[in-house]
Image 1 (tube, rainbow, N blue to C red):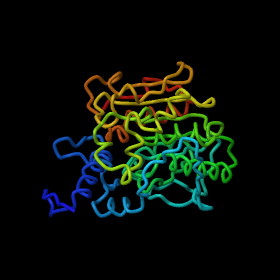
Image 2: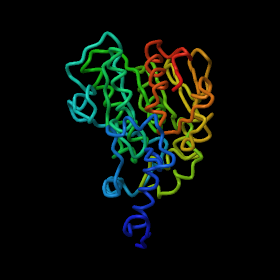
Image 3: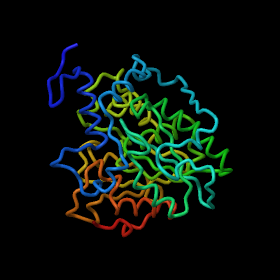
Length: 319
């Protein structure tokens, strides 16, 4: 295998490419692009190293994404996973009780619950919500279909352990597509009341990052590329499922999930509410990754849950 001589010693070309994609997708921005809105949370997020990415890739089946649109994918979650730690205090806490629906967190590509939700979680807990999260897809690189099946099995367990009838879901980036897939293909729709989506790859993305790696290395990347077999199948049935209400927050500065307008599900105003940071804060620069820790966005997400998917635009405050 050829090598690429970069800032570090010669890494295998594939691993180096994977590291570049991971750094961009999970938001390890260059020093010149680092956002002040996430600098305060840097000590709570971990960026994947080349070694961890390589190890993750080795667990992905070489066959890539499923080619059949009819084959069922069965999720499997070990008993008690809903109470297992994911590196964020208060998430999957078996002692948590709340009169409100449980909140399930779905992370993005090359990422984790800790990386994507360390800032948001304390705000959810302060609002009196019980929060649950699952690590899926070997860091979010596995097939979105399989991740959706695993998430469905996890939510079934959350419902069983809490006695709730439905959950609310917060999905960041790929988490939005994982939710869409689960609602459509695994029977999850009746079990979800509100889906709050942060920069979701709901309709995929035109970013060249998604096609920079072979599908067998990052099936989730291929699944999120516009025109993929998964997105084509999902498009055939429209965007909405069940009675789920959708609230979507995006940023005009997003260069990862593009075009930004495609992040929003198509549906009536009583089912779909969307806002861009710049609608409220025209001069604020918030990229794809810093969106998840932006204080105004965090406040808006909490309000979206409190209003059953009908957030007040004024809840998104400017920094």
